[in-house]
Image 1 (cartoon, rainbow, N blue to C red):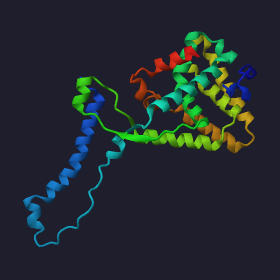
Image 2 (tube, rainbow, N blue to C red; image 1 turned 30 degrees about the vertical axis):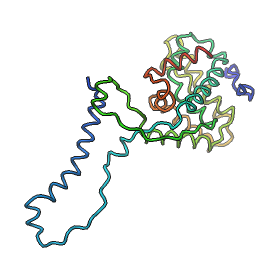
Image 3 (tube, rainbow, N blue to C red; image 1 turned 180 degrees about the vertical axis):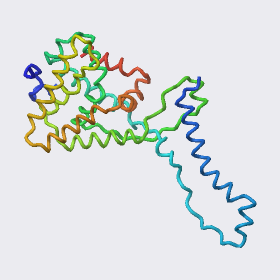
Image 4 (cartoon, rainbow, N blue to C red; image 1 turned 90 degrees about the vertical axis):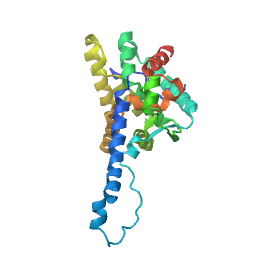
Length: 269
């Protein structure tokens, strides 16, 4: 069945106030209260009486707020080149996917559902084969009042931990030197997601997904390699589309409906 993919050869690759804002304010206030409480206790009259004559406490460096790193937002330094590179990766992937007879035989609506579900991990997998610079810069948090006045529910960036995690994952994938055939089988395992298709096609799509995974693990020569590729597949399936969209698309498109932009690209190619 899998011979119908046509993905195995090298030739295929030639071508009101938002709740989130309120939660952020509460988090910052509670964190700052921790530091202020200690200062207030040391400045009280009772504290002075009990510690009269005691040596002054040594000056220590101010302790950094535990929520500081988790609330930091970053964005790519050069959004337009990164956006262009991401579109190029997706265009190559979509051409490959649409050339597969088993995908082209699905109803058009199911094709769009599968693309909407899998575009983010497919993009990350494509980035593992291309050299895309994700140099980032910290962005300034917008205030609560700004969010209310502009009705903006989107933060001006992506949490730094999410970006660093994605970058590390891409580096690990590159270190595996995924071959063309392995890449094609991984794409097949990602694109075919039976949960989002119509009931009439669900079993067929599930069979295609299982066939792609079986072909991948039969292709590799060692059990160690199979385990590493299985871990890559699991990591790709856990990709957060919101994070990927925030890095590669929203700095340029400025829209929350990245799925529609991706589907327009799919229809074009």
